[in-house]
Length: 139
Image 1 (cartoon, helix red, strand yellow):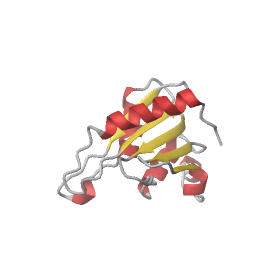
Image 2 (image 1 turned 90 degrees about the vertical axis):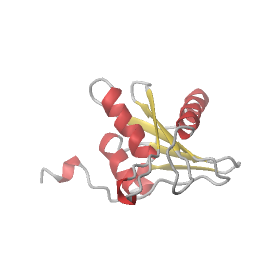
Image 3 (image 1 turned 180 degrees about the vertical axis):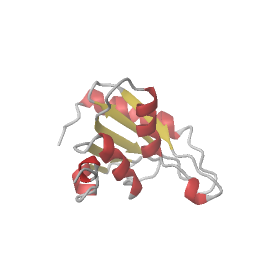
Image 4 (image 1 turned 45 degrees about the horizontal axis):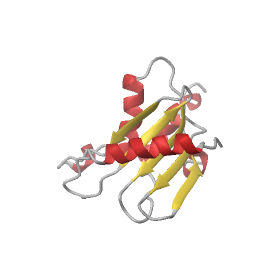
């Protein structure tokens, strides 16, 4: 599992907090920001965007990955993701998000923080131990 340096962690936290400020969450009132760090040292962020048709809501984590794909150059490899919500306890990603992260960073470090002192630091493999990926399509 990749270990984040203090400067990387602070940069990811700043990007995720900034993204959370832009969250569109009139239904849950639970803003979330996420930031990904690529193997090239690039940081991309995203926020949750809710919809009155709840199934069309997109999580911050997926938005951050999609931003990296959209704005990145060439092959994308996610090394780490930091997820921030302004709640006391850190919130782990929903079930769909690890699957999307896996596509671009199967060995990614996942770092979840809130406003309290508790931090959840885990690997994608721990969140999604039996992931389905591109390798499963070519059997």
